[in-house]
Length: 326
Image (cartoon, rainbow, N blue to C red):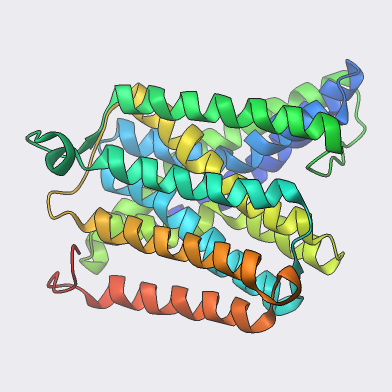
């Protein structure tokens, strides 16, 4: 039943985010809002809404390991699985200067998160926590990123494809309400199912958050990137992943911590995951800037995917916390 609850929650989350994006995009079109604004706000926020809703439920329910694990795990999944599988399908050419600037920005986001999370080491506090002040700072970073993105988009054109479904006003409102309901109940079911699964399997909530929950909330990004790669629109494929990584830390984690501080596990296991994410983000930077023909090749995509398999095995097998920081 817990597994069915989790799957039902994941389906509702994905469907809800799609309904919300379709309804809100159609409504925005009716009010003559440009595709540029729709793409940078409604579409971008919509694809990150599953992570946000899951984090809010996890935080309010006191399942903070799932909250931090969902953000870190989603970014690891985005980088290694989504980019890895996309590159295996077709090598990802990186031509846009936008992505070249966003990748270092995504690395900055991970480093900022790791810095804020280590209060004992940095400030000598009694416990590690992403506080409300940290959340506000992350949201300030997010506002800077959004201002930069809008300025760049105005000069270089839309950064996201917008395919608003034509519908009348009443239908758009119904889609928006259905989307919000899907997100609410999907997030609730997914968190409850994940907690029960963790207890049944005898693993920590952090491991479930880093793997199953993270993969479930990243399904919209996976679908978008693979379709973009097949259509030979590689800038959209990699831009979608990098943009989502920035959104997850600055916006999702920022909102979550601003509402309720997020304490980290006492065993410092989150540091292992954040260090791994930093290393993989740097590897992405190396592949993009120094790779042959500025592409993420099939070989490099395979390296990413195998790195995710190895990381997942570490999470599953490290029951006695024998690995560093975990």
